[in-house]
Image (cartoon, rainbow, N blue to C red; front, side, top):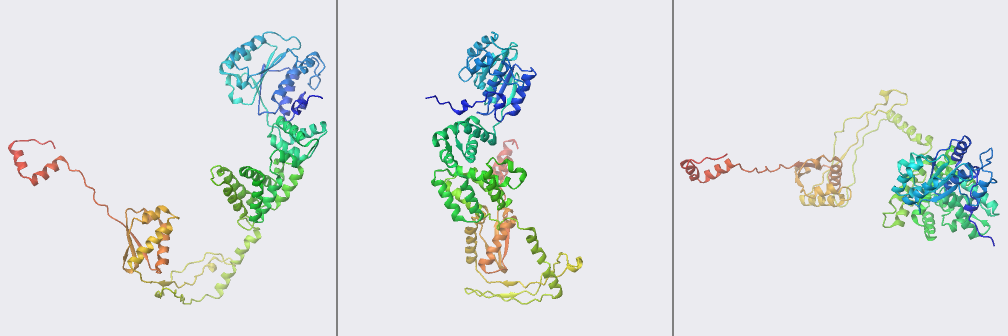
Length: 568
C-alpha cells in the first residue's frame, strides 16, 4: 500500500508556469533570470499558503539548472535538477528561522557561505519565517546579506513583514504575494479533482475556495478532508455539513420573507438556523455578505465582484431585481449595527430578532421611493383646489364645539380674525398676483374653564411625571419650582436662571399639557427669574474696628489715650 501524500505536496508547482494566482511575480522573476539581473537577496512576503516558499524553491532550482528551457524553466534532467528533486542538493539550503533564530545559527550560516558551489552557478539559501530571527541574529546577518560572495543568493520568506528590521528590508528586493482569488482556487481544485478522479460539484469547490480565504494550501487540505468524508464524490451538501457552513438557501429565504414583510417566516427561519447549531453572529455576518452581493448585482459592471458560482450568480440577479436599492442599503446599515452591538448584548437572540423585524418593516411600500410619476401626482392635484377657491370663495361659519360630559366649559367665540396670509403658490395661468389670495379666517373657540390652585399643583406634578421620559433634565428642573395662579389664568413660577424660560420646545410642551389638562386654552405661562440675595462680603480690618468702636466707644478713647497706631 502506497503512502498517502497530501494534495498540497503532491500537486506542488514545480515550474513558474504552474504557480497559481501570482503571474506578476513569476513573470518578474523569469525576466530577471533571463536577463541575468539577479539581486543578492529577495524577500517574499504575504499571507500563508499563497506560494512564497514554492516560488523560492522554483527560483533556486531554475537559476542553478544547467540546461534551462527558452521559457526559463528548469529542465528536470540535469545533475543539479535531479539532486534538487531528490532533496540531496548541496547548493540549495533551506533554513527554518523559527527553530534556528540565534546568533550562533547565523554565524554557522555565514561560515557555510564561504564555501563555493560544487554543482551549478549559485549557492542559494532559503530562510523561511525570517521574522522569527532575534535582533542580534539580524544584526549578525546584515554584513553578509549586503555584500555576499558573487555565487551566494538569499531568498527570505515571511508572513509578517512588519517584524523585520528596516536595515534588512533595505538590502532585499521585496515581492508582496497577494491572496489567491476564489476563481483561481476553484479552477485549481477542479484540476486536482480530475487528476484524482473525484467527482465534485462546482458549488462545493466554490465553498471550499471561499473557506480557504485566499490560501491555496488551506483549500487543498480541506479538499483532502472532504475526499475522506464523502469518497470520490463531493457534493455541495456534504461540504456545508462538514465545514459547518450556513447554506445559501437560508439567506435567499429570509430575504424573500423580509421583502414580503412576513415576520413569522423570518423568525421561523432564524429559529431553524439556531437549532442547527449556528451562532447568531455567524448568521448576521453571512446575511451582510448576501445583501452586499444583492447590491453589486444592481449594476452589470460590478457583478464580477461576487465570488460565487454561475448558478448562484443567476439567483442573486433574480432576487436583486425584486429588492430596491434603498431597501438593501438600509438593511445593510441595520445589519452592520447589529454586528457591532452583538457582543455587548445581554440577550443576543432578541437583539438579532429585533434587527430582522426592523428590516422586515423596510418593505418597498414603506420608506422606499416610488415611481417618479406617482410621486408627482399629489403636486398636480394640489393645483385644482386653488382654482375652485378663486371662483367660489369659502364662507365663514360659526363653530360651536360639543361640551365634554364631565365639565361644561364656557365657550366664547372671538370675532377678531388673524391678519390675512398670502399664498405664494403659482397660479395655473402663470400670474403671480392671481395666485395670491386671502384665506378665510377660521374662528378659534376659546375655552376658559375655571380652575383653582390645588388643581394647578396637581396638573403641574402630572406633567413632571409624564415628561420624565422625554426630557428628564427639564422635568427635574420643574420639580424644584412651585406654580402660582394669578388673575386671567396666568401661571407664574420663579426660576433660578433664564435657561428654562429660553427652552422654547419644552416650554411649548408644558403649555400644551396645561391647556389640555386644565381644560382652558387661555392659560399663560409667566416664568420669572428670582432675584439672587446679595452675597455677604468679608469685613476689612478697618470696618471691623469701626463696628466694634461704635458698639463700645471706650475702644476709640483707649486708642487715642495710648496713641495706638492701626495698620489699615
